[in-house]
Length: 375
Image (cartoon, rainbow, N blue to C red; front, side, top):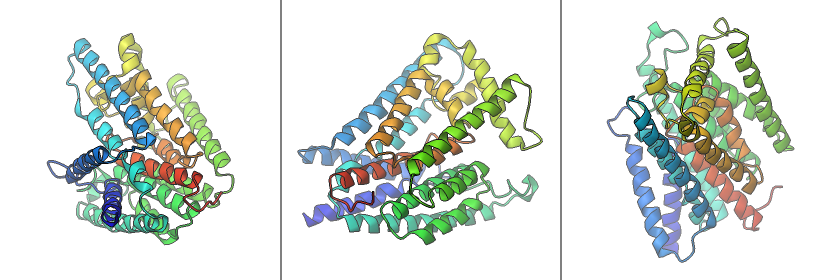
């Protein structure tokens, strides 16, 4: 029993590593290899255990349905258009999803206090890794690109915006640990926020500031979270309406911010010309560039153009299921994801699914009376 417990502790720690470690400058990101090995280990363990958590089946069902819908869309795209179709991005997103599916099977085997020590250790290691990542960006400093973009290039991530997305997710995780599980990580939250500021990723910084403010107190967190989410959605929708139909642009405010609305406008033009089957199944994640000449950047463009109706319904249903089964505690993670999504969304997103799975699993353990309750 002791050996199994130690193995599960190591497994959980390594899975969490997959949420923030990346080596994007290498021909093959080494973290993919670690993730693949962890998937193999998790799959082998399924054959050795008589009982599998229902959550594992649910994660697998959602992720596989999503992948199938994506490849149907890709198949239809190849039949309809001559564009170079990206077939790897949906698989990478599926891989990001799959890494998390074994978390429910190991969380309950690790003592509560030991799990918390693993979470603290993972947050501390993430700060060290992200500090090294920041150092790498200073070595790649390009003064000709201007102050905000001078530190954008990175050896570890595609650019500093992706680093910002990861850091924001880690801040959300640390807030959950601190405010819900009462794990002492306030100093780590501060250090992560400093690292976030140094990414100069405006969307990520705004999202980080918002969640730090509204979760300063966990009291009425559901009301505050859903109000903020709806306010973000309606504000973005209003600005988009102005851009698309009132010929108002935001170049003077921020060129990068304005570009997100431009992408939305050309994506809408393409979407209106797509056959019905591609509207349902989407053109496939990562294929906006092939059709538009520019990446989607925006999670909402990704939804209606790349995911299609079916893929979006599957993904949003998974999000809703996560919120329901966790009693809305996963909103602490999903809120910054959807705020950042106005500017950026990534095909490789293990930080979303891993943290989401941990929060759900911890809340399920709490509901069973295995964790101290802080309701």
